[in-house]
Image (cartoon, rainbow, N blue to C red; front, side):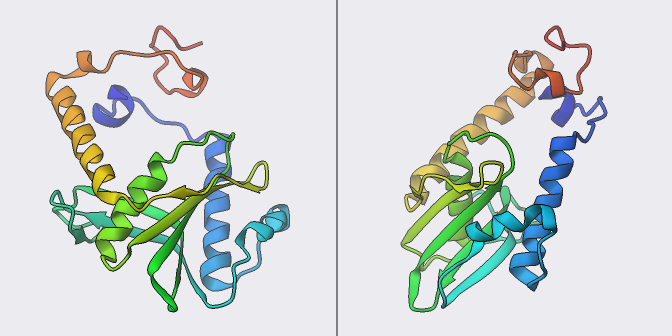
Length: 198
């Protein structure tokens, strides 16, 4: 974490998995937003992105919030947290309801936290929302994940503030606050000098 994202003293290589993920995200964005056809290798994803009539579909929606939780632009100087929401579904007949869908090209690992953070951003931008649901589309398995209720955005925002304070405190302590930890991602880490690098 320290070397890759703070000191930035190592060159991060783009893996084949990352290149594929970026390609899929771009193709789905153009498919959902512009009506472009999906490449042949992604045609089987269409079943996951067929929505009922009457729904507005937004792709790659870029949102930001300030420290106080109010909405701001993605690149604003006072942006405190930002995110790009892969898919947002809304319906004029249900103005207080929204759905968030996130594309995942890796292994199935259900954890709603990314969806929860995206719901915080969406609620700030659209305060009329009272019900937000969401799920991951696991594209390697071509299946929809578990549906999560993401409506409790105040609790999630509180957790985000606590996490940010912890990171800022660690940042003030320097590199020793970011000890290396072994994980399944070690073979893909750009920090070759780490004791855990294979």
